[in-house]
Amino acid sequence: MMGTKRRTRGRTDFVVFGIAGALAVAFVLWGGLGTNSLSTVTTTMLGWLESNFGWAYVLAASGFVLFVLWLAFSRYGKIVLGRDEDTPEFKTLPWIAMMFAAGMGIGLMFYGVSEPLTHYTDPPPGTARAGTGAALDTSMATTMFHWALHPWAFYAVVGLAIAYSTFRRGRPQLVSSAFIPLIGDHAKGWIGRLIDILAIFATLFGSAASLGLSALQIGSGLKAAGFMSSVSTIVLVVVIVVLTAAFIFSAVSGIERGVQWLAATNGILGVAVALFVFIAGPTVFILNLLPTTLGDYLKELPGMAARTEASGGLDMARWLSKNTMFYWAWWISWTPFVGMFIARISRGRTIRQFVGGVILVPSVISLVWFAIFGGAAITTQRGGLNLAARSQEGQLFGLLQQYPAATVTSLVVMILVGIFFVSGADAASIVMGSLSQRGSTEPNKAVIAFWGALTGAVAAIMLIIGGGGESALTGLQNLTIIVASPFVIVMVLLCIALVRDLRRDRVVLRDDKGAEVIEAAVEHGTERYGEDFYLTVDSPSRKKSKRS
Image (cartoon, rainbow, N blue to C red; front, side, top):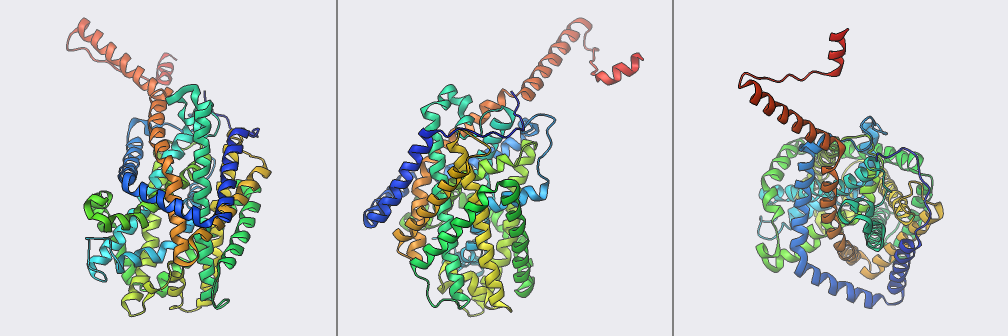
């Protein structure tokens, strides 16, 4: 059955909402009343995951890239995510802006300077000597590895499965509904509810981690602009409260008004900041860095995708935990809400168009962004100013201080960080509300507000567990890896379920039937008329015109 365009207001699934909400509240209470014990437990769990399942992250990540590219270039690529006659609901530029803002905006602001600079001054174990030309190549290639094809493949897997299930098959907009071809009616029972609860939890902690990063960077901006001499955990919590209130307000206003307007705003501001650094910074060096980075990324991609503890020992294991494993877990934690959000705005596009837009366009944007900010930061580092000695959240502001109008640009960046987070977090709140209300496309505003407030509370607890400063960032990363881990299994099974669905699509069945009919006709004609037989296929319209 094909989907319809009508919006649905669902009833609250009190099993999903109650269990997910109760567990999240319990986490907040545990963190508030027993911070040390929660910190001990999460540290132990993280060590166990790193030792036993680091390989699973590595294999799954590259597997998702190959899977979505295969779908795009296969015969399934022409299938429309909706009715065959459906056209895209949003034009291409707004579609890309909303998708990018929800999927990666805050990360680019936080890591645009810090990641290339970190890998340049402290390259991955066994790769290059710090501060050399080889370190520059490795740094930019590693950064692209974490921010280009792989993360967007995570989003594409979930987004495709949900968009196809919802708009092509007419099922509720739930992660569990995409499992119907794999587990049948069990997707509507306790197994399906467990899947949706895992999706809510991954979304909650992924959003909370992003909120924590936003608070850290805004706090650093306040310090860099001279508004504060130091930023305490209390100040960070206040920032979290303000951002939480902002994204709840945006979320209850809906996608058409809230998210789309915010996406356009941060798109304009983001381009403005990037152009400023490009012009004020080492313009020629940045232009040279673009093709170099792309070439190094493609050349080193197989080796980077194969990095495990086996290839570099304990040093590599520690590096992977702070870098690749965190990024993969962060992207995975974002997949339920980014995937569902992308699905919701992608009705009417073919699978091939979807994959091309979701995989390639953001990868190109990431290439340009990191070449500008990474190139400018590394040039500054080479010039004698030790940007790398600053905290990660403060490195962007340290770079901006080297150019004119530093106070103005710092304020713009803080606004941009806030808007990027709000535009992603309101989408997350809407998705958590939808998962709580049986796939409703317009979840209850009170439910949205509940999940938004809980996201802020979890973010505050994650920062408190970390203890502030660099250790706060570590706390955010560790909890994200732990909570996202079960969803890796969900995503692998989701790929299998999607392929089963696609094999039974009417376009595929029609093509298969047409091939069978033609093959049978050729065999019959050859048997009856010999090798001189040939078959012509004419369209109904031409037949009609010939008869007339």
